[in-house]
Image (cartoon, one colour):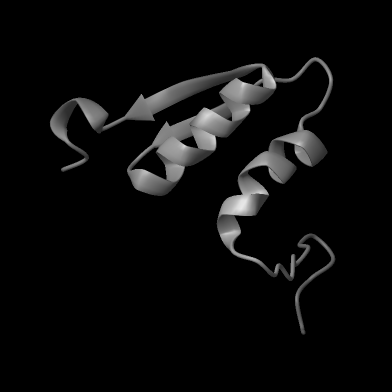
Length: 70
C-alpha cells in the first residue's frame, strides 16, 4: 500500500468496537502505562475497555467536564 515500514495496517471486520478489547490486550507492554486523551464517545469507550482489563493506564487529558466541547 506504500506505507513505510514504521507503520502497520489493521484490516478489521465486524466493527471497530470489538477492537477496544483487542488493542489493549495485544499492544500493552509489561511495565508500561497506556495514556489516553478523552475527547468524546469513542475514547470514552476505549477507556472503559482498558479499565475492564485492569491494565495500567491514565487519562492525561479530558474535555468530559465540559461535555466534550473543547
